[in-house]
Length: 195
Image 1 (cartoon, rainbow, N blue to C red):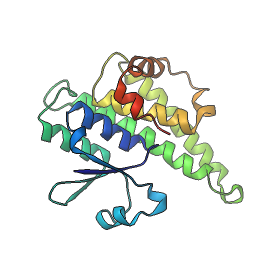
Image 2: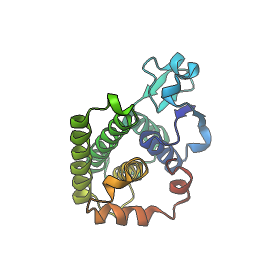
Image 3: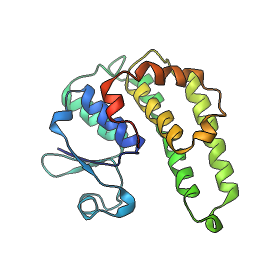
Image 4: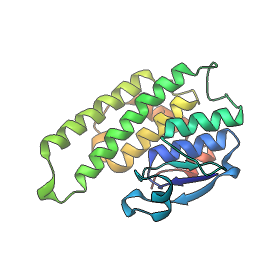
């Protein structure tokens, strides 16, 4: 299998961690393919040029980090990242964490536009979304747990810290900070840190 990713992507990072935890990382060829560069190899398998994109052995592509993680978990048969067969709580937290990451990515793209093309109202709106999303995650997360939801949450807060440190420094999120501290020693967390 082949996984198209970018080093800063919180979504691709989540997939890489899940691949490791399900014992499938050695079956993945990683291809660094920043979507902003329109890599032809990625365009050929995903016309919307989205990462992560997983290419299966039969050549089909799977997109969306939630779908990729679900596929990896099902393929491995390893459901240790779920508290029960459905993984409802973990998936619920994953969706909110992915939302926090999505808003943070949108904010990043708005902020890297030339200043004369930036929309101040949109920046403020997205900053408020990030703040609310991280506060919500802080109220929901168990910082001592290690599952699909906390992995997605870690990816969201780490990405926000990388791209929006001035914003995250103003938010009171003690549980998210504890989660970061608790997961910091894991080798896969270190090797996939956003950059």
